[in-house]
Amino acid sequence: MYNAKAYSAASATSPLASSVIARRDPTETDVQMEILFCGICHSDLHYSRNEWKDVMPAVYPCVPGHEIVGRVTKVGSAVTKFKPGDLAAVGCLVDSDGTCVECKAGLEQFCAKMILTYGSPDKHTGGVTYGGYSDSVVVDQRFVLKVPANLDLAGTAPLLCAGITTYSPLRHWKVGPGKKVGIVGLGGLGHMALKFAHSFGAHVVQFTTSESKVA
Image (cartoon, rainbow, N blue to C red; front, top):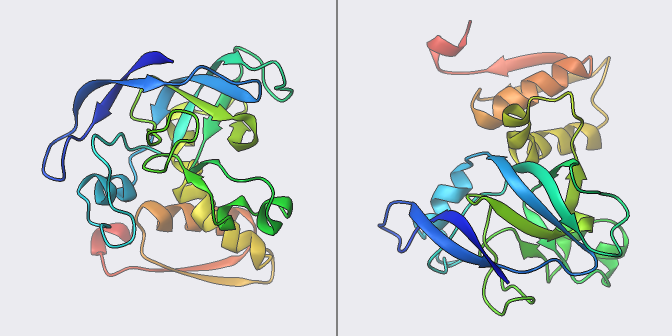
């Protein structure tokens, strides 16, 4: 175990404050990253304020953040996809049982025992997982993504949640030339969907009630 700097909430009414958390040392399949950027998703606020207490009660202190981009600093002996110095990213999940039907199909997000980036039981430490509002993180290589060196890292971070949330259904429905796409709202997710659908060659119609967003 080692200490990492983080921003955490001590209660549902507390502001985020500087703190120190314990991170595990990398196992043979883990990637350790220095976190360079982490997006701010409204889910982070919902969880920190315990607004999901009926389905996902917050455990305090909590460290939010699931749009993580950083640089690999250490890898376990069995890691084959990454090496120190690589740019990498972590999204909403950091582990799953790896044995169920969903995991074997590459659909870990449907695993009944999936481990979220924060607020889930951490089998390695006995506590809970802590998110990306921190200076480092350790994650199994299965849940770490490569980041091309030519990308703007600050702009890449939101792709880990807002990006995949809109990219996935567009790809599922094979959006492309000859398809029409209607997007309701031009906020964090809406602007991602607009960019993706347009780049895929679809006919895109944007719906908004905000005059300031028309331009």
